Length: 441
Ligand SMILES: [Ca+2]
Image (tube, rainbow, N blue to C red):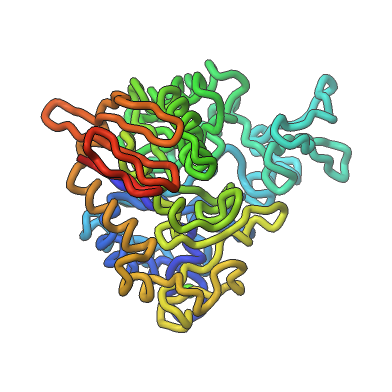
């Protein structure tokens, strides 16, 4: 199974306004099918006032510029006709500030007041979030404080209130009923206070639901494992980072340790990825652009057990450096052709890193067998022909500083994978590994 993460606004336009939308996505199905994608993860598509959409104001309508419910359904159908599943990003840890529930709560409606989390006398109003020290409690003019772990525009929902739980369950059932194939649950580790409570929450929430459920649990191995059992798929931040770190530093150790920690012997499928919207792109990993290293990272991704997931444009080697607070900078329009003026091209912002005529477009790279896109497509084809690797076991045959050999095996199949992380040619067991190349025997 191969996944592909899409920021809809930047992907493909269907009505000549330069903003990506459902109609455009429908027209992009042939490209995704050619890549061999099995499921797409669409970043938030619900009504929201932000560019990223993680602060939803209405879960029952879509961003106006993305399209109508009818267009959404047509898009779903087009994906399904090509055998591609659609997974929606679902940020249900909080709502947007302008969601009617929060607006009613602000006006004193006791029913909706209890949908959110309010400070009481014992609350430490100076409480900070662990990862960057930002404040969690936000003041209102009337002296009350509400909790918003992800900032003042995103008030936290109160999952102590069974009505909130029921609302979200109802939403999920509604979307599945519409034909959606699964969800990527945003901020999934923050629903409850402790790991145990959180795991119990998800177990209860997902019980009797069928689909692809990806969880964003950006945490240490134990926390990931405990949630993995419930979700079945886990975004593997650990290995996804360590592939790049090992390749860029030309040292296999971090990668081997990460595979042992986050891939081997799991009772769920680790979802290994190139990069995502919360970090710099693969092609802009520390130390900057290196075609060989980008390609080697992609080769490693497609020769590991689990599910390979590509962030839109990483197959082209699109660049992008993540920076706060302008996090949209990393979400450049996907370049369909060199002049970026073709029908379907998005252009909602000037590309910060991947401008016209930079030799990066789909059209340009497809013509060149030595391009990053052609390289990625070869590995995607390999993976498509070897779907058993998703659940393969792995045995290390050689752990050298600069090269690595392992065996992937299942009940019926077995392959040897050789990764050369150095700029020198390496020969092992008669297999010649060119600099920064992967060989499969
Ligand atoms: Ca549009």
